[in-house]
Length: 417
Image 1 (cartoon, helix red, strand yellow):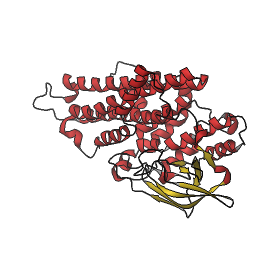
Image 2: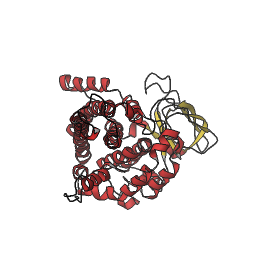
Image 3: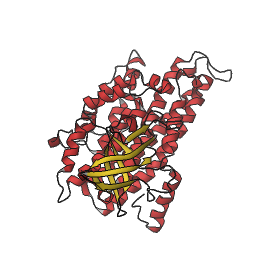
Image 4: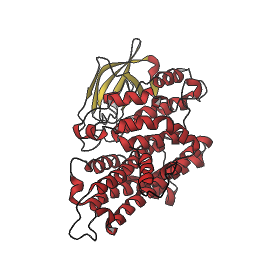
C-alpha cells in the first residue's frame, strides 16, 4: 500500500466521529493537478507491485512479471512526446513517479535510471538541427516497452575518462569489447548503452542488443543493498552494433548530473516514505511495552509518538528539498540557459545533502521507535537502511558538498559533476 492509501485508511479509522477525506495529505503535497492525473494511471499498478514486494526482497526474486505490468501500463513511454505515442510527462513527473514506485519496490524503481537517461539523450538529440531521425526510431522502440540497461563504469578504472572498453568499425557496423560493472538494469535489459572508445580516441555510446552471443550478463553484484537491480557486470566480446548506433558521447544532453542524482533522490524519497509507513505499521502491531516506557500501550507512549513525529519531520524536510530541486530542473528545461543550468545543478546538489542525511537518519531512528521487535526478519526493516546506504554511496555527498562550496565561494563551473 502506498503512503497515500495508508494515510487515507488512517483518516477513516482514527475516529468514528471523523469523516474520511477524499484526498490524502501526501497527495495534496505531491505535485500539481497535472502530475496527480498522471499518477492515477499508475497507482493501481504500484499497489499490485506492493503485494509481495517484501517477499521478493527477502528471497531475492526478480520482478520480471511486475516490470511487465509497468510497461503494459505505459511506464516506458512516460517521456515520449504525444506524437510518438507517449504520455508527454515532464522530467519532474518521472522523478515523482519513481519515488512512488520506490516506496513499494525500490529495486524495480532503480532499473529505470539508465533507461530514461537514454530517453533524455534522444529527446535532446531530436531537437538538434540535422538529426537523422534515429532518435524517433529509438523513442518508438522504447515506447513499446524495450528496456535499456547501463554500461558505463569499469571496475578498476580510475575515472570515467580512463575507459578501456573499445569499439572498432567492421563491415556493416561496429564491434564492442570490454567489461562493465555497476550495470544497473542489466538483468532486465533488451539493450545496453555502453561507453567505449573508438580507434581515434573518441568516446562513443554504443547501443548493444542484450540478447546476442557476444554479451554475457553476470548477476554478480555483491553490495548489501539494491540486490535486485542487476547492478553486476556485463562482458562484451565482439558484440555487434549497428552503424548508426555508435553515438558520439559529446552529443549527450547537458544536464546529466541533475538527472542521475535526481533519480537517486527519487529512490531515497521512496525509501523514506516506506520507513514511515513500516514504522507506523509495526508500532500498531506491538503488544508489549518496555519496562522504561511511560504507558502500557506502545501506541500511547509520548516518547514513542515523539519518535514517529521526528520521522515525519525528517521525511518532510527531504521531500521539501526534493520538490525544490525538481522545480529548478523543470525551469532549466523550459529556459535552457546558463543561469538556469547553474541554478538547477546547485539545487540538486544541495538537495542531495538534505535528502541523504534525512533518510539515513530515518532508517536508524525507526528502530528506536520499535525496540528489539523492529529487528525481526518478518518485517525486514533493515532493508531500508541497506538500500538507502547503498544508494547514498553513489556520487558521495562529501564530494558534492565540496563542489557546492567551490561554486559558491569561487564561482567554479560544476559542468561534468
